[in-house]
Amino acid sequence: MSNDDSSIIIRIFSSNECRRCKMFKEECKKFSLPHIVIDANADENQDICDKYEVSALPHIQIIREVSGLVLLEYAGYIHPISMLSTLKKKLKSRASKKVKVEGISESDIIVDRDGVGNGCSSCGRKKKNES
Image 1 (cartoon, rainbow, N blue to C red):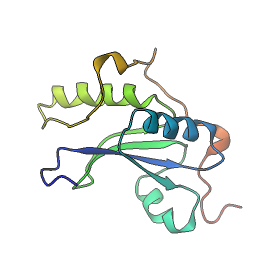
Image 2: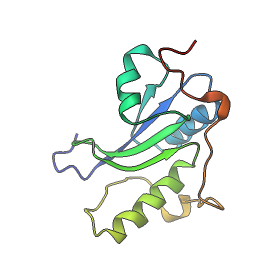
Image 3: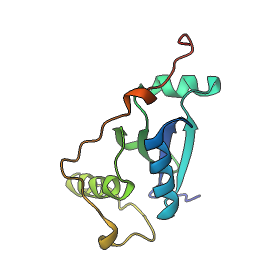
Image 4: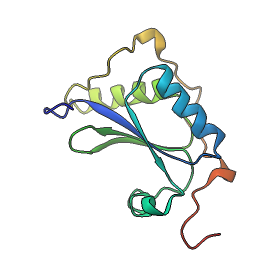
């Protein structure tokens, strides 16, 4: 873990039944992107899901590795490289610290047609009081 907080990690709120969640996780592995997965339907994760208002899955955040600061948040599917491209543009416009992402070249970046993803309606997060 870095001490300077310029490294990032992708936090994925997902469920095992969600096809788009599985796709996103597989693509993170394919590109060797640092990521953690949080089961949005597990009882022990309800507090963190409530904190970030997770409702549609996947719910994806790019965060600073040390501080946990959320840099970019996305509800629904987006290609991970497109999300990093969006983050790069956002950070340039804010003159923020450089973000270290190893192993990604410009040719890997695929920009979505409209930049909008949709959460899977059948994969919404189940809250404790729902059955």
